Image (tube, rainbow, N blue to C red; front, side, top):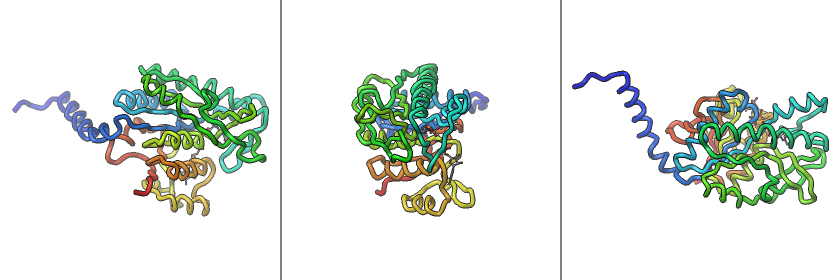
Length: 289
Ligand SMILES: Nc1ncnc2c1ncn2[C@@H]1O[C@H](COP(=O)(O)OP(=O)(O)O)[C@@H](O)[C@H]1O
Ligand SMILES: CC(=O)N[C@@H](CCC(=O)OP(=O)(O)O)C(=O)O
């Protein structure tokens, strides 16, 4: 028999990976996958590039990816430069009139276009939107104490379906339109959950800067029930920015999303490993069978 060369070994490894991925490629053909790309996950140029590559590959194998992004750290930086003070209550930014202007400029401007450009740079075709475009996300005020923070009330995903047909990847900034001309700042996880529910998405991937939801000992819980999440929020195991993330998972599951995964967006090929391997990645919360 011919001696196996290093190149053959590489090829065999690739073929093995591909054959294992085949059932998943079939399962996700035509599926809608909403991906929330958090501000902490997009920290470096490498992370941005690797994310963009994953998204383009997903599209190439027949998935309809929808990107909803955050940008909390980038907003913080601009508010600091402008010397505007900012506070968070349960992971949501208290947003006055001056703050909401900055939030919209940073999210719909710099952050949104950076992601669009990264995806296009990898050979994809991305279009940037916010909840204001084509009435995608109409919001009500969440609570008067939070100012211009919005809760998605009316989602019209029509424009997204049009983009899918045109092989285009939507990239959405979590800014909502009010019914009286207001601009609302929406937590990125909340926006992604509402959009995923309106699309009856197969998967919602919440990319962040930790490998998953951790228990009291700091170990990642790979599979979580909705009841476990409620207990972990009540007893304080889940805190800060992880509260809107896990609450989003509960709402999304209740409103028709098949499964939600919280995972580390900085890990190489995070989205692909989650979708196309047996072991997946991060913490998964599934709809009850
Ligand atoms: N039980 C928990 N497991 C994992 N992370 C947690 C937990 N409780 C709080 N966190 C915090 O939540 C953070 C993720 O939320 P956030 O900073 O808002 O991320 P992003 O900007 O990616 O949306 C983690 O970096 C971690 O510090
Ligand atoms: C209401 C609210 O808190 N909105 C967020 C929107 C950005 C966001 O969600 O960014 P990350 O995903 O990077 O945290 C904010 O102002 O920071």
